[in-house]
Length: 105
Image 1 (cartoon, rainbow, N blue to C red):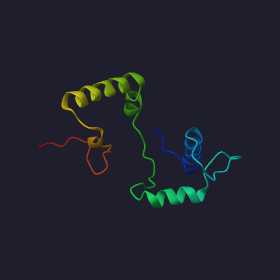
Image 2: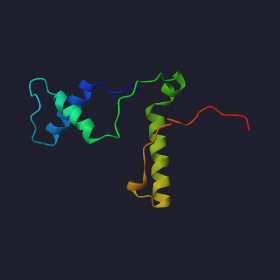
Image 3: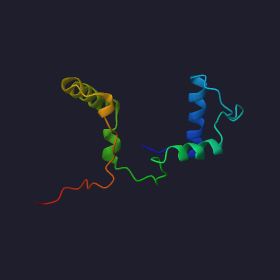
């Protein structure tokens, strides 16, 4: 329910490089990628951006649990299999720009 900080992303990059034996110049003592790597990463991926975290409702937090996640992915798997949907045709989107409040017709 929280975004990642710059330092958390840098640590994650270090861990991924270590797990996959990817050669790098990351700081082994701090166990994190450098700031220069982070900003170059953002430059290589202009679709990524910094966003101010928004408040999350208690209902949304309560709904984000193991049982609901398993149910969601079981349902997704059934739909993907039944319709022959290829992974390249599955997109991750958020509700930015869409109203989540019902309006009277």
